[in-house]
Image 1 (cartoon, chains in turn cyan, blue):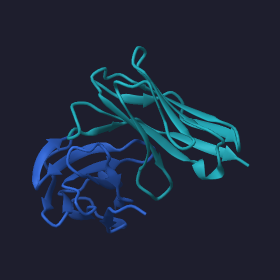
Image 2 (cartoon, rainbow over the protein chains, first blue to last red):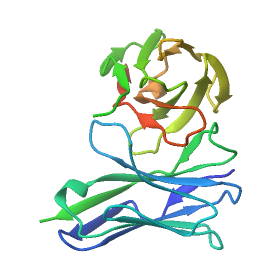
Image 3 (cartoon, rainbow over the protein chains, first blue to last red):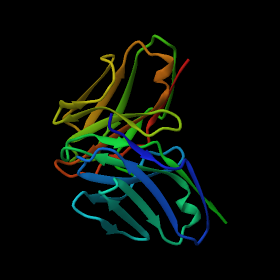
Image 4 (cartoon, rainbow over the protein chains, first blue to last red):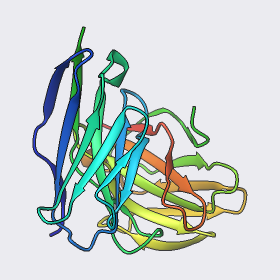
Length: 113
Length: 112
């Protein structure tokens, strides 16, 4: 079946470095993608989103890149900070705004001081 | 701090029992979804309500049921609890045709 997955389970980066978190998706019909951050004991928190008709979107310190040719999504975090330590999920939606979110398994980002 | 609140935060139940989890959505949000998140996994879609009617359901058995009431509250009911039902249950709400879901902090359910 269709799934959203992540390449690596954990990522460790030095404080101040840039982080890149990658995600592969298999549903070519997905029209919207979202990155979520989940800290321990909390629910997923929206980071940034991108529609399928775009290939790049920037926010504050974060950038999402979408490559529909290879069905790949990435999240770039500039100048990673200790507060960025969390589990990151990519999620997709197919079929419009009333459709469900399909999440990947998550990757843990650990920031070394 | 999100506008979605869930209660209780933690709950321990015995196998075979029934449980009701509650969610208070953000004001103005007429769509609410429930997700199950097992340890170390991404959230899995259970079902969604729009204006008090179910308009989407994931791969969960009928013993998972729910409702949404007009005051932006929602419930998730699980009957005949099984050990594998132990998970974090997340409620998420949004307004109309926006894509942006706001999640609550979840209810940690442990079935023993």
